[in-house]
Length: 120
Image (tube, rainbow, N blue to C red; front, side):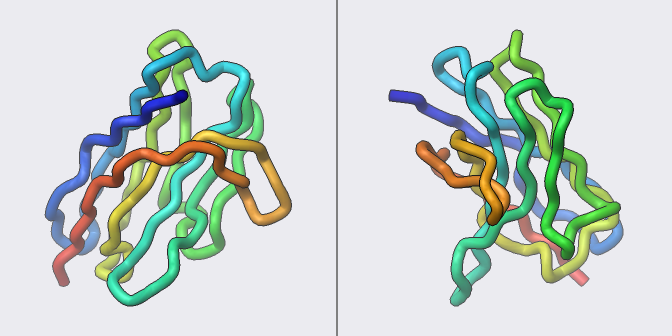
């Protein structure tokens, strides 16, 4: 069983930045990692994914050029640097462990989520 704990969410003004972190309870070097988000009244959607080595990344069109995913396997942590935030980025953001797929990432494990709120 893999436990994932997200942190770094909060309230920020439009145009601001936040960095989310996700710490895993066990070494996760053998897995791809990713971030998803779910806004009120909407389905959970893919945001970004990173391969096991960290060499390959994939982003939703809505965040390309603004968000950067990275990982530190030694620290068992994956990050999501979010810049130029917009009110439409407001959502609960979830970390996931899984396999790279055509849809971005097919998750096997989820974190509990961290709230990101962007004010206009």
